[in-house]
Structures are given as structure tokens and as C-alpha cells.
Length: 191
Ligand code: M6P
Ligand code: ZN
Image 1 (cartoon, rainbow, N blue to C red):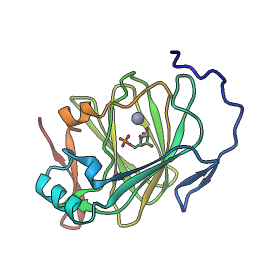
Image 2 (cartoon, protein in one colour):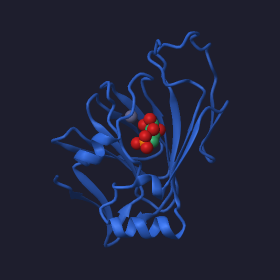
Image 3 (tube, helix red, strand yellow):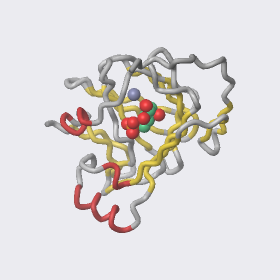
Image 4 (cartoon, rainbow, N blue to C red):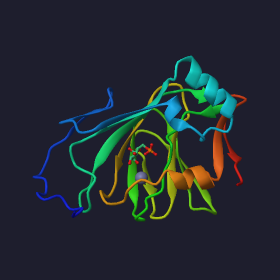
């Protein structure tokens, strides 16, 4: 079966409802609860307690109808809610692109960070409304909410890039992002 859409999309106007983290017309949506982040937070006992208590929504993703197929440029708004597991801030699972291709994030509301790891080096970009974080090909990427309101960003990525979650489970992200003493800190996470 071909990866390419039989019929390319027509030009499309998409409206972002930034306050709600939604796109119109809507495409697929995804909700990730604490149970979906198994093996990612350092304090696994705290993770298990959180899953057992109310299994909170950590983040959600609302996409436009542009599909994840080669040549297309799918895009989505991700909302990471404020919170922490033990002291590790709420974050996305993080992934590599099996087909190494770049991606851009545009901060929409709230404050967060874009953590990137190429297996050797860790990079951290502070993201605010209006800032663009560029993810070069080959860098795993994870987003983190560093403040006390929802952090929202727009992602635009190549439809054929794919999502490899196993790479991050195995190699980590080089650093963990924790709240401590009223500040946000990156702690080395050697594997
Ligand atoms: C952004 C994009 C998506 C990604 C989503 C959630 O919207 O990078 O491709 O799926 O964030 O991140 P993750 O897939 O790591 O859970
Ligand atoms: Zn990506």
C-alpha cells in the first residue's frame, strides 16, 4: 500500500481557538493520561500512586484534518496541563522521528520548554507565546509545562516522519526537568 494519500488535500483554512486548544475544522484528537506515561517519570512509585488515585490528564493534542502521510504537513495544538509527578514537571512522552526530519513548534499560550536530545547533547529552549522552537532532524523532543497555567503550542511536522517512543524509553532525554526551591531545574539523567 502506498504511503501517499490517493487524493492530496485542497488548500485549507484552519482556525485556532488558542484559549481552548482546538482547531477548526477539527481532525484527530488525543488525550494522554498519567497511565499513558509509564516508565517516563523518574519516581515510578509516585507515578503509580497518581495512576491509582485519579489518573489525571497530563496533556491533549488537537490536530487539523491534514493527515500524517508523506509530503503533507500535519499540524496540531498540544496543551500540557500544569502539574508534577513527585517534582518532575508534566511533560509529553517525547519521541524520535524514525525518518529523521525536522519539526517546528510555535508557543501559543502559557510558558514551557522544549527539551531535545541527540543521544549525546541535551538542548533546552524556553517557549513563550510567539517563540518558535526548531527541532533539527535526529533530535528526540519532549515538551514540558514549567508554569502554573496550561502551556499550549502549535506543532508543524512532516507527515512521513513517524513517531518512535521506544527510543526515548531506552535512551531517556539526557535531562529531567524538575521544580525545586521555587525554580525550574534541568537535572542530568545519564543512562
Ligand atoms: C506535538 C507533535 C506531535 C506529537 C505531540 C505529542 O503536537 O510533536 O507529533 O504527537 O506533540 O507529543 P508525543 O507524541 O511525544 O506524545
Ligand atoms: Zn515530532
